[in-house]
Structures are given as structure tokens and as C-alpha cells.
Image 1 (tube, one colour):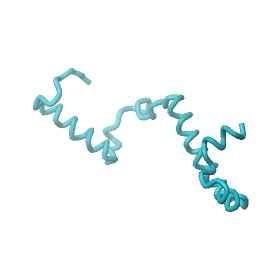
Image 2 (cartoon, rainbow, N blue to C red):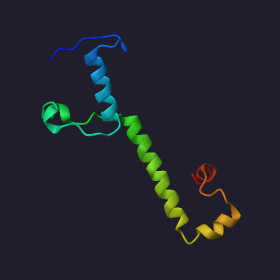
Image 3 (cartoon, rainbow, N blue to C red):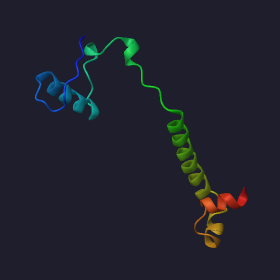
Image 4 (tube, rainbow, N blue to C red):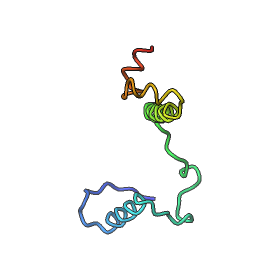
Length: 94
């Protein structure tokens, strides 16, 4: 395997082919399994802690909102404060 830096968009056949395959992969088209590198390189990339925490918080908020709207108290409190559950409400009850 030889890797060389080439200026982008310079009409080099190998570079153009790599661009085509990268675009196909980004579009979700699957690669031929026999052409993939060894198993060690097939593992997913590690995710960042910040991104993982942010995703978890977003999902948790969505789940809490869904649970709140199914609560028997939701209809009555909604007439008092239609913004519930709001960030301001969360700060008030802390």
C-alpha cells in the first residue's frame, strides 16, 4: 500500500476513483466485503465523550417530554402554563 499526497481536483485517475468511491460510501452504498481491510481496521471509530453526553441529554429530554404528555396531570397543568415542560419550570423546581 502506497500513500501519496496529491492536490485536490487535479484530474489524477486514482484520485478521481477515490472520490467516486468515497461519495458512494457516504451515500450508504455498501462495499464488497472481500475488498475491506483486515478486521482490526473494520471496527468503528471511538466517539467523543462530549458528543455522547449531548446525545444522551437530548434523548433524555425527549423521553421526559413524552412521559409528561402522557401524565394525567398534563391536561390540567397545561391550562395553567402552556409552556410546560419548559426550561424555566425546571429551574424553578430545582
